[in-house]
Picture 1: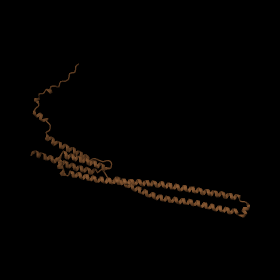
Picture 2 (picture 1 turned 45 degrees about the vertical axis):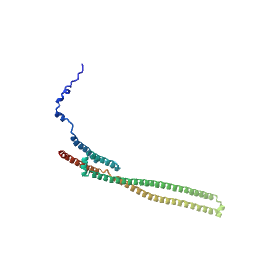
Picture 3 (picture 1 turned 45 degrees about the horizontal axis):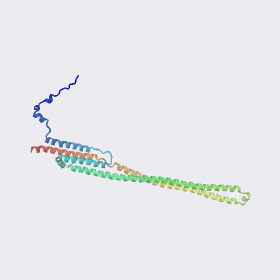
Picture 4 (picture 1 turned 180 degrees about the horizontal axis):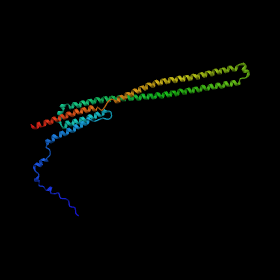
Length: 286
């Protein structure tokens, strides 16, 4: 079976005379005057929407000064577009201090940016100082540990030497006692030698006890000095950390200030548009 398309040719055969003048006028494009009225309204609506968007824009992370610069450039760009594309409304808006409102928010954000930059610089300085103090604390702990080890090592070496001398004297004393004859005991000569050895032994033992006392006193003094220095460094570290924390919480994204400025500029532009629209029929009537 062959395929036969449906015929729709009749409506294309309508005579041109059937199109009335009224129907052609009904489908005609808007006049130039209509376009001139509608176009500024659309342009203004787009600009006002963009301004509202800027007024509600949040900045999540610092430094906020970088966001302020970009935000001001965007707002300035919108105002320049308004001025170039709807100059008659821009002239009217100037009566409502649009430029002054922009300069006011610009100055406000500039002050905030300067404060944030100064705060950031101070925070950086505190961070650097904190790093130095923490290094000083680490060095103090390392030096103290090395000093204590060196003192103990030196004392142990001295103690071993003294103990070796004492042990040698004790062996010599014992050998002398064993070799003593009856004749020597009668003459009392060994007693003199042994007494000399005993005196030397006592002197060595005293020296050993003094060495231990000196070590204990030195260790105590070293610990007190170390503890005092460490306490001061820790105190400074805690203070610097607090100052760093205080500088971190200073500053915000100035949302409410920016939002208020955009609302004021929005109202000024709306008022200017209403005025030029109200003046247009009067001028056409003239």
